Length: 610
Image (cartoon, rainbow, N blue to C red; front, side):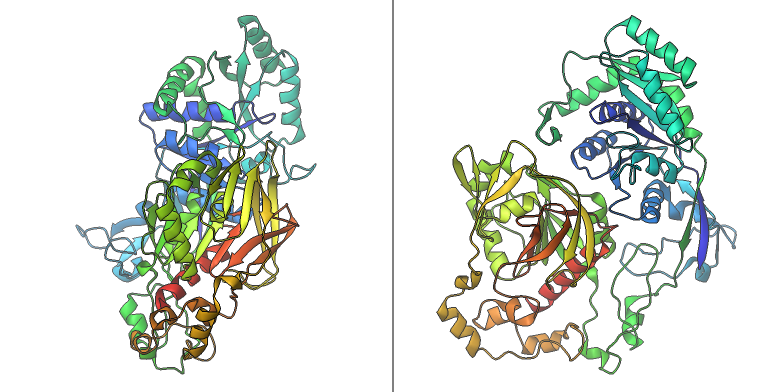
C-alpha cells in the first residue's frame, strides 16, 4: 500500500562561498547553543565526510547522518532525512477503537517476534503525517554553496537544500574584505532563486568598522539579515591537520573546546532569529509503501512455502523459496539476529557512516565493537568490518599489539569474512613505513604502505566489479569516494598459494568433499546435515572456504576496475584474498545496498559452515 507522508521538520542548511570558511564552526556553535536550551538537534553532513560529521555527532550527543546526492539517489537522501528526524510509530497511531485499550506495541517486539500489522490489531492509523521526534535538524554543507561535480553544480549543497526545501544560512569568511562580500552573496541569490538564502553570518571580522560596512552593504544590496558576527579568535579551538580537522577522538581538550565555543558564540549569534528561520521551513512530502507482515518466524517455517531472509524495520516481505521442491526440514531458516558482525572502532579506525551500521542492524545483525589498540585477541565473529581512520598516527600502538594482529591474521586464514576500507586496507597490509621506521601490520596482503605529504587521491569514485568475489556480482557498478595520503610502496604480486604448503595441499586433496549445497542456489544445510558433514578445518584440512565457494581462489586479485578515481594501483581497487575484500573506496549503504547484502551473505555462509 502506498501512502503520502507529510513531515513538519524545523531545519536549516549551513553553507558558505567556499571551503574553510567556518561552516563547521558555525554548525557546532548552533548545536551547542540549542542543546544548552534543552533542544534535541539531529545533525546531517552533506558530502563524503567523517571528521566533521564526528564533531557534529559529538556535540549533538547523537549520530550525524550523511546526505550525498552522488552516492545515493535523491529519493534515498530524502527518505533518510525523514526517517532520521521523524518518529514513525509515535504519530501514525490514533486512539484504539476500544476505549481505554492500551496502545499497540511496535511491529517488532523486544522478543524479536513480528507482531501483526496495526489494522489486524484493531487500530486506526493516520499514515499521512509523521511527527518530528527531535526539535531541529541542522545540515552542514560542504565546500561552496554551488560547488559540485561539474560547472552546473551537480550534487552541490544548493541541490540538497532544494531537495529538502530547507532555508540556507551562509557563513562568509570576511578576511580582508568589506562591501565585496555583499556582491558575492547577491550572486548566490540570483544564480538560483529557488535556493532560499535567508541569512548571513560574518566570520573572521577584525574591527567594528569592518562589521558595520559589510552589514550595511548586505542589508541594502541583498535584503537579508546578518544573523551573527564571529571575530577572529586568538586560539584555534579546532586545529587542522593533513585530512582536515583533528578528529575529536584525538583532540586533547574536546569538552573544553565545545564549552568555550558555546559560550563565545552566545555573544555573537542571533540564536532566536536563526531558530525562527529553521522553524519556518515548509512541510516535507514523500511517498512510502507498507507491506504485509509475517506474524512470526514459526509461521514462515511451518507454511512450507516461505523463508525469512531479513528483518526490516516495520516491514517484512514475504519471499517464496526457490527450493519449494525440497523438504523444508532440510533447510535452515536463518534469523539474521544470530549473526555477530565485528566493527573495529577506536581512535585508529573511526570512519563509519552510521547508516552502514544501521543497515546491518536492521537485518538483525548483532554489532560487536572491537578495539585493535587494546584487545588481545579477536572475538568470535561471523564477519568483520574495518573502516577507515588514521593507522598512520597509531602505527606504533597497532604494531605493538602483536597478539591481536596474529589473532586477526589466523581468522582470515580460517576464512573469516573481512571487509576493509582505506585505513583498514592499510592495516591488513604487511607493514607501514613512517619516517624511515617500519611498523608491522596484520600481513593478510603482501603490501607495504607509506604516507605522503600531499593527497594521493581525493574525490568521488565509480567502480565496476570486474572479477567475481565473495561480496559483489560481476559487472555491478558502485559509487563511493576516496581520500588518502597513503600509497603502496611495494607489492608482491606472487600468488598466495605459497601460503599453503605442499603438505597441506595433499591433506586437502585426501579429504572427501561432500556437496555443500543442494543443486541450484547456495542455500544453507540443516543442522542435522551439517553434523554429518563438518567443515574441512574440523576434518584436518585448511582453506575451508576455498573449496566451498567457487568465487574464491587462494590467490590475491583485484575485484574492482576504477571508472573514476585512483584505486590501489593501476586504476584497480578491491584487493581480495579468501573472504577478505579491502579497498580504498568508501561505500555508503543507502547508495550501495549490495554491500549490506554481500556482507550479510558472507557472514551467514561462514556461520553455517564453521
